[in-house]
Length: 340
Ligand SMILES: Cc1cc2nc3c(=O)[nH]c(=O)nc-3n(C[C@H](O)[C@H](O)[C@H](O)COP(=O)(O)OP(=O)(O)OC[C@H]3O[C@@H](n4cnc5c(N)ncnc54)[C@H](O)[C@@H]3O)c2cc1C
Ligand code: SF4
Image (cartoon, rainbow, N blue to C red; front, side, top):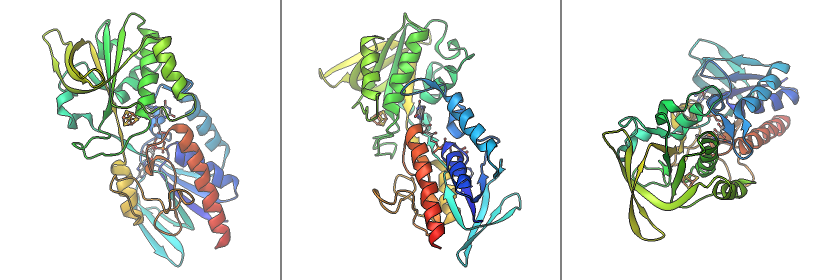
């Protein structure tokens, strides 16, 4: 029986672990936090069909429980040494593991919206991020905490920390456009009287049912999409916000008063993935996301033989794409091990 160590217990790590166990291998899944599930622990309902995030996470969790593999929570890798085609892994807790292959599934981190000072995150009370809003949209959460009692006008800003020279992230985070559509619809369902505006540069509705959801947002929920980049937000005496933008379709400057501003923050590779890359001595791209051997045929292969990649540590991706990438990682590990 071969032993595979997986670093990162989000949905990518969980799915890879199950698939590799089913293929007859022994798996150790290492997660730095106290629970498995990664970002899905914080999300409310998932695009494109509003399935509760909890449902997907619980299904994966049950799948893990039904299988026999080792899970190390609150654990981080201290070192990875390669010796005679084996990986000797030591954790900060002093555990020593010998693996035949490694899968890195360390995911992503959210762009820190404080870096875009002009939008006033953590400066003004009613400026929140899409990640904050996800938590507020979870069943039992109180929306008025962020928005005041009855927000009449809400604005979303796209591309916060993505496609942005100033923040150093040139890439598109891929899922924030559709996340904005999803969240705007959720808000409208709860606050039917509110007017909702989305300020975008381009809309990237790349996935199945995304374009339909975007149309529904306009036609059924009356959400307005304005092509324009927000230049700044300022807080008024009553805690509402004055936002300034340029409507790039009409070419006119635009000022608007809103009660809540939601920043659609991008995805960054983050510290967790940087650490995993350093410990495993694998390469990463300028963006920080892990370098795959090839874009088309080897997207689960890292720059080092025997170390494989799964999920959003390689690029921003949706839950659906992450699960598929994790499954293909397990398949590649399995066929690579058979050849050894
Ligand atoms: C605001 C927002 C809303 C979203 N909503 C949706 C949606 O509605 N539908 C949808 O399809 N997608 C959505 N997404 C995308 C979704 O979050 C990702 O597809 C998914 O989280 C990727 O899973 P992952 O396992 O690759 O990474 P993660 O969820 O980031 O999990 C990675 C795990 O690895 C662990 N880890 C990291 N580094 C280490 C290390 N060095 N050692 C040990 N453990 C480590 C982390 O603690 C974490 O548990 C949304 C994204 C954002 C930003
Ligand atoms: S998905 Fe949309 S909001 Fe996110 S970076 Fe790309 S264009 Fe901007």
